Image 1 (spheres, one colour):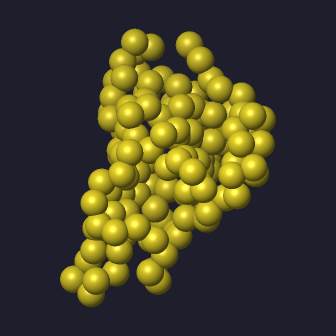
Image 2 (cartoon, one colour):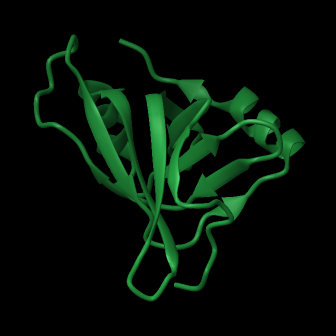
Image 3 (cartoon, one colour):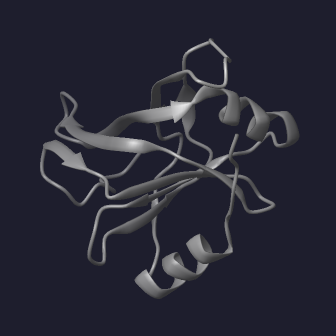
Length: 128
């Protein structure tokens, strides 16, 4: 993967994050953080984590094979992470919130702020 992460190494708070299905259904990911790190060759990569209601993630995955991640880091820094690798807890009680870990499979795509807000406005947020 080429150098596609424009940030220095470190941890960054994400203002808003959503797992999004192709039909616009979505699940918010709370308290999301991304970490930028460099490999031995100096290429920057990222990984991240946040809190999610597992039962809502399961509901999203029941109907869709491909889930994307929208990330709002503030100002003009808004991104779409297509079909990231997802890891989450395996307790599916409606009251359980656990940590979701994610890592990209491909480079993220920057989204213009207006387009990002329009996409968020069209989301159907899944709730219990």
